[in-house]
Amino acid sequence: MKVDGACHCGAIRFEAEVDPRTVVICHCSDCQTISGAPYRVNVRARTSQVHLSGEPRIYEKVGGSGHTVATAFCGACGSALYSASARSPEFMFLRLGVIRQRAGLAPVMQGFCEFALPWATDISAVRIVGR
Image 1 (cartoon, rainbow, N blue to C red):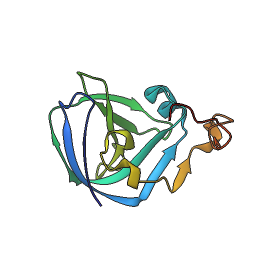
Image 2 (image 1 turned 60 degrees about the vertical axis):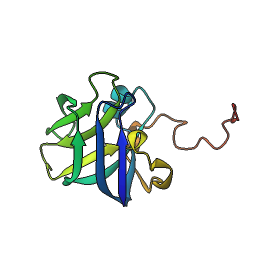
Image 3 (image 1 turned 90 degrees about the vertical axis):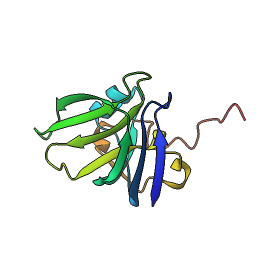
C-alpha cells in the first residue's frame, strides 16, 4: 500500500510502500515513555521503499534485545516519525499517526503485552465525548 505523510509542522515529509498486514500495537515500556501514550502503533516498511524529504533528529538507545534502536523525530515540532533497529536495518517502523492514510491501517497484532497498562487492551467501555 502506498502511503505518505508528514510531521505536524510539515518540515519532514515522506512517501513509502507499507504492508497493511504488519501494523502492530507496541506496549513496551520504551514506546510508552517515548510516545507519552499507553502504546504506540507502527507499520513496517522496507527502508529502500521509504523516501524522506527533510532531516529528522535521531535518538538512539539500546533496547531490551541488546540492539541499538534509532528513533527519528522532527527537531522542530517533535513529531515521532519512525524507528529502525541496527539488528534489521532493512526495515523501518513508521508511526501510524504521521501517515495520511492511517484510517486504512488497522492494527493486526500487539506486542510486548506483558507491559500493557491493565486497561489499554480493551477500551470499548470508555465513553466517547466531543462528537
